[in-house]
Image 1: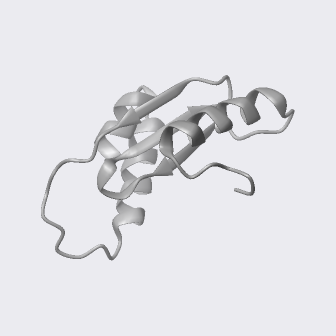
Image 2: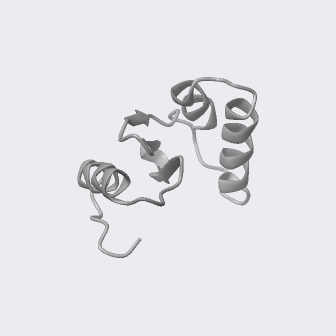
Length: 89
């Protein structure tokens, strides 16, 4: 996103501000942080972070697809956002 800071904490604060300022904003924005996990900002400004498990990387092909699929499977079945984020990580 244009103008979004690159550090995770600054990005989370910026995204929260954008969510509260804009009329049209997604219900959830997720930023994946690679081996550091992911952060989530909701339309109402809630911020959540989840750590990635410390595992040896074998192949990153499909990592994003697996993350999104896991997150959506849980969230669309009414799991709390924080739980869906943790499982996705």
